[in-house]
Amino acid sequence: MLTITLPASLSNLEKILAQVSGWLESSGVPRPQTARIELALEEALVNVCRYAYRQNPGDVEVRCRITDGRECLIEIIDSGIPFDACAYPAPELTACITDRKVGGLGVYLMRNMADRMTYRRESEKNILSLAFQTAPDRNDGTAASPQRA
View (tube, rainbow, N blue to C red):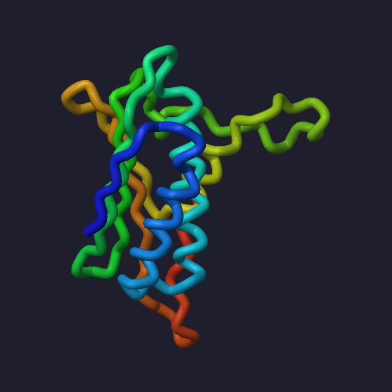
């Protein structure tokens, strides 16, 4: 298990991602899955750093573990304003790119990179959980792709 707690600042993003990347590698997570996990985690962390804390800075905690079933579970925890990423509306992807507003794709990417995404608010904290299958299920040894909703 890996637990990291640092100030929720974009300047700490690279440090957190490097620690998680090293932990994933040492845990034997295949590289294609590691890339998916890192992308989803980066999007979640950027959201916390930019939006969770208005004027008062706060921390972000990242917890990582591998289950017996070879599922990688990542929890992103902050005590900022409540935000349920699971309830965030899907972006309009059919409109012309020039007609769409800038941003809003981070949650979409998290949903599509993770096999499962859940949110809960507990003890005044946002807890976003991202789950990724890491066990090979195909003859070529790669892990299963996430199911799209």
